[in-house]
Amino acid sequence: MSVVGVMLGSMALIVVLSVFNGLEDLIRSIYGSFDPHLKITVVEGKSFELDAQKLAQIQKLNYVQYLTEVIEDNALVKYADKQTIVKMKGVSETFNKQFGLNKFIVEGKSGFDDHGIPSALVGRGVQYKLGIDMENRFYQLQFWYPKKLTKLQTNPEKAFNSANLYPGGIFALEKQYDDFYLFVSLNFAKELMDYGNRRTALEINLTDISKSSKVKDQIAAILGSTFEVKTADEQHSGMLRAIKIEKLFVYITFTFIMAVSSLNIFFTLTMLAIEKKNDMNMLYNLGANTKLVRNIFLYEGLIIGSIGAVSGLLLGGILCFLQQQYGFVSMGTETSIVNSYPVKMNVLDFVCTGLVIFSVTTLISLQPAMKAANT
Image 1 (tube, rainbow, N blue to C red):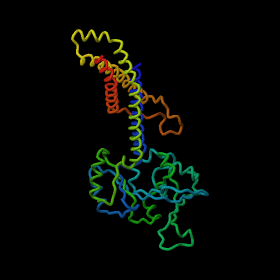
Image 2 (image 1 turned 60 degrees about the vertical axis):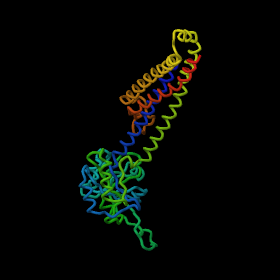
Image 3 (image 1 turned 45 degrees about the vertical axis):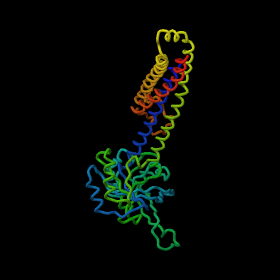
């Protein structure tokens, strides 16, 4: 029973930690397919004046592959008799090359030019909200954005800039984007929002994402303290931090559970010490000292823990491997991003689990071993 308790505890811990690793990687893959490797924003305010000289310096840096200028803000969009607030994102020409939107387009085309007619890329969720029919060319998307007024207007229509675009394509990326985002060309966004030479962000993709930190420091040195440069992980630091904290608490919780399950070792060794009292007296008569007797019981506890730990780690690894290959444990919902729970095994998890079991088993076995030696 002692071996089985340790085995089940270590197996469960490895499986749960591997699932958390899988979820962390899943989040990176979901947002990584759309988010840039580096994102530059201003520390204060929501837009900044574009400096052509500094922009050229950034583009010349090693590993910088694509640089996309961005103007992003909320706008009102009407289509036929429906309307909604969207995140309108105006992007420069490198955007499609940078993110490869073609693979996410479910209707229409991925560009901002439909046979010479300016067009927009609309999220699947926005399409549902507005009831956009891609085959209907009688209706256009009507964009409304508040003007920068110096005095109050009595006519509400004069307080807004407006422009029209045809929906050129529908993308399905991730619910957070599909339900709120709409992409337009940078020139369209500049005219509608009166941004001129101002931008809300610069997005950069690198030839080697592992160099993100190095390039980030170089860009920060060029732009100065008024700008903030974020890596892919830093753009979603809150969500990734939450997963790491949950993983830590799960690790601590399972450590306590394993400590409780290891109490069987304590009781087993205690009963063994009582049962083998005569044998221990014989050992003492043959010249054994208390250290030898203590180590016999201590090593027995460690052997029990080691067998349970190795068996549990092995079974946990096999379960995780099977889940990776066959996905037999489903997420349980048809609308899930993935069909089965994501799993990623990490060598460090195995090492940490083994160390915890070794430490717990040693502490649990120590008191019965000392008691047996003093009997």
